[in-house]
Amino acid sequence: MLKALQTITIAISCLLPVALPCPTFAAQKIYASYAVLERSISIDALELYAKKGIINDDLAAYARYAQPQVMQQLRRVLVTQVNLEPVAISQFLYTPQGEDLLQRIGQIIQTESRQTGVYALRSALVLAAADDEGLTLLNVLRHFPSSSIRVDLRRSLQFADEVEIIINRTNQAIASIARQAETEASSGVNFSQLPDLRTNGRFKWNKQTLTLNDQRRDRVYLADLYIPVTSRPAPVIVISHGLASDRTTLAYLAIHLASYGFAVAVPEHPGSNTEKLRSLFAGRANTADEPSEFINRPYDVSYLLDRLQVLDAEDPAYELNLDQVGVIGQSFGGYTALALAGAPINFPQLQKDCEDRVNAWNISLLLQCRALELPVTQYNLRDPRIKAAIAINPLSSSIFGEDSLSQIKIPLMIVSSSDDTVAPALSEQIIPFSWLTTDKKYLVLLEGGTHFSTLSEPDPNTSPLALPFPIYGAYPNLVRRYMRALSVAFISSYVTGDAQYLPYLSSSYTSAIAQKVSPVRLVQTLPPDLNSLVDTKLPK
Image 1 (cartoon, rainbow, N blue to C red):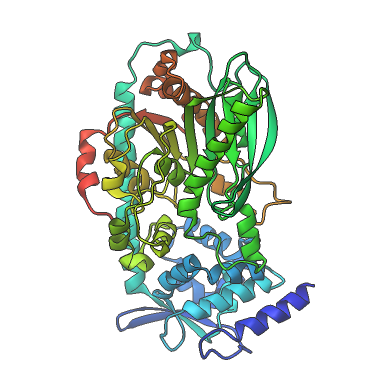
Image 2 (image 1 turned 90 degrees about the vertical axis):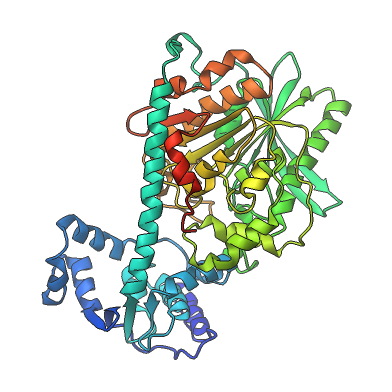
């Protein structure tokens, strides 16, 4: 089967829409150029070092300038394998996001004739994935369909400067928020004498799966419903998963909230879930997301609430309090939560920010810009039943911008991760937090967290994309414990109006539960010294 797949993949790669010959050779050298200056290194030298740890004369000219740890990192990077099938790689690289990423990288990596490396890179990635040794950087270099690879150092240094600006400003913002949180942590509350919200509550719960059929949108989807065993109608919390996730991704949080007496409904958004990604990789779809998902996702939640209202009215088995409703969302689900909370899509902001998206370092912009393919009109996505919202690692800077986020009037918690490379903390959460005008707003910063730290790791046997464990951060279990506690505190305070939980929404509480290896911070206002960062335009 693998040989057949290799044959098909090679045949497809030879039909790429450029005049690249089907290669009977592999790249032999990498040329690094800066203006008229140019130096080369053989790929054989890199392979010898990567596989045997031997630095020959060719590589020694470079190694003498590098620290030993840098050389060891280079060796690991060259041979680290990414477990993706060639068809999956090929399918992704033909999506709008894949095309944009290739265009970005192709500005630096060029063919022997100094042409953009977009199509050569696509071919090399697909062929490397079909290689017996798998998709590694070394194999990508070996399969590059040109006898040499040229790297534009001037352009790469410009990119490096842009990235350094973003990293430095993000680190400044994180350090400033940490200092303010530590200063505010002086309430005198003895949290050791209060219930530990990180542990399960006292309620048992039952789970069922609903099949929803919104005929108006011709949309059928599932939702898991966790119903606590209580003597009173249960407030309702809806959890919206992110792109290429499903209704199990945040099941740990649903279970935890159910144990505190909340009925938790977790819909699966069919146009942007795991199955959609599986269809992309299998060749049954040409993208992992559809622009219509920016509209359908909030409507999925509203239709689910409509259905729960009918069930509550007609079936005595359902004891739901639909006057007390909250929403939690992560990533694309974070966008969903913000839209339901009252932020309309901001087409003028999108048009402005997406003009140069190929040069964007903010990966989330590649998804946000897809909304420009929607008909431009005033979509009403807000659901007035939503009393409070939590947006975890949301996409927000361009799809909403300041004009839209300032329209949110309900209590809102934004959760940000310091090491988020998908929806970067400073541009997508910290600066957008400064645009909020609602009185009840909280910014939670997960230091050491990534875009995926709040999620359960997927089952590698069923997930179409088995992400390497480090992508979840060093301490995902600790991060999930933080999220359990803060979600209960926020939802209890602002959905059910239980004031006894308000002390947990403080810097004092996060300071009390924070572990040094991966701290959590909470602030209600940004410190004054962040004003200059907020007002400074970042490279997108």
